[in-house]
Image (cartoon, rainbow, N blue to C red):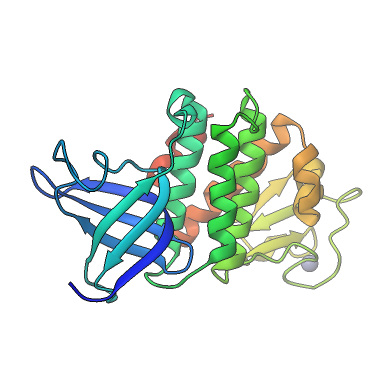
Length: 250
Ligand SMILES: [Zn+2]
């Protein structure tokens, strides 16, 4: 069976492998992303208390740690949850988008414990009702998670000055822009060099210059920032995230 590794993990994806087994993508705190086969997970009696579901989290044991080959999941003790993520459609959609982005932007066995803690807190906030009943609290968490993800995987956008001329972006007096090709904010004097730029409202620009403002931003500003982020992730990935459709149509 080989060496057993214990970790804490969030299930990002689960696909049927056979009548009785699943292939799962887990994001583990110490191990990073792990793709594993959960043999017998769909049998009524298994080591997994039922099939693994995306967004469930708990303690795992697995063996066979080799990049590009499936590990074998031998235990998944999922933490009992009230299922709030599944009862609230907006929460489910936002959490699934976070899971998809984590899966697409992290490498196998490349650990990001701070990001793990961030996404786990996001899920627990939803479960325990701290994200609020409306879309606003969810969107605040989703946006902050997305910036944390970009930071952790080395794609942090430049937000403290114009990427091109390095001058501070004067968000009060002049229009400012976000460009995915430039990976950051672009000022009015430089925007003509970046055909893909998106014009930002002053409020949205303020939030990007100082991410600490996002928690207090109004719904319209959050919606605007999320549209910019979806556009940006589409540029990075080369396709729109599958689970972002609900946000693109917002
Ligand atoms: Zn500039």
